[in-house]
Amino acid sequence: MKLEEAKMEFIQTWGAIGSAWGIPRSMAQIHALLLSSNEPLSTEDVMETIQISRGNVNLNMRELINWNLVSKQNKLGERKEFFSANTDIMDVAQNIVQERKKRELKPVLELLADLKQQKIQGKKEEVEHFNKMINELEDFIKQLDQLSEIWLRLKDNMFFKKMIKVLK
Image 1 (spheres, helix red, strand yellow):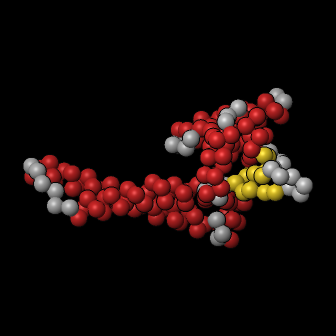
Image 2 (image 1 turned 180 degrees about the vertical axis):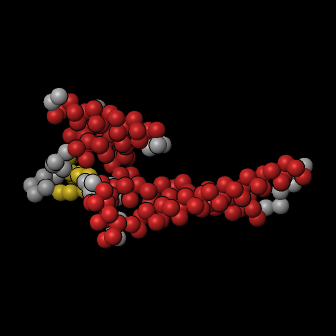
Image 3 (image 1 turned 180 degrees about the horizontal axis):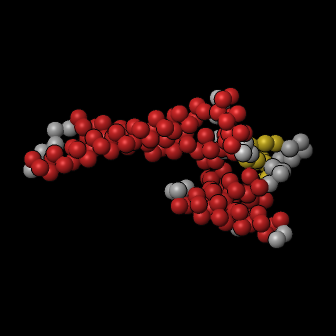
């Protein structure tokens, strides 16, 4: 398989995975393109390679920058902006986990806390069932949040790094 074919397969698959995770397909494809490129790319390069509009590239590039997955760069003598992906996969994973916690776990925990403060009215059995479900869901989400925090802290832990090397 030629390099360009392999890159395009990676880009398409990363886009499909991103879509399954609730991330726009084009955002994941842009990220994959930048990850697989050894040189920073311009908006035009991205548009041409992935066949998407300038607006789509600009919107998703801003979002990738907000997620700390991509950075903007300038080249001497060029008026265009260029973009490159953070290629430290552990950093990429951490940034994604942090962003997902902020966008998904935090709002759910806030909703559940708010629901627990409400005086729910209705049939006693149904209210009890609903409250039980809210409590169990809150416990689960809090555990998930704690696990993600532990994982985020492990990256810089020297013991963890040595353990990973031994497992390889």
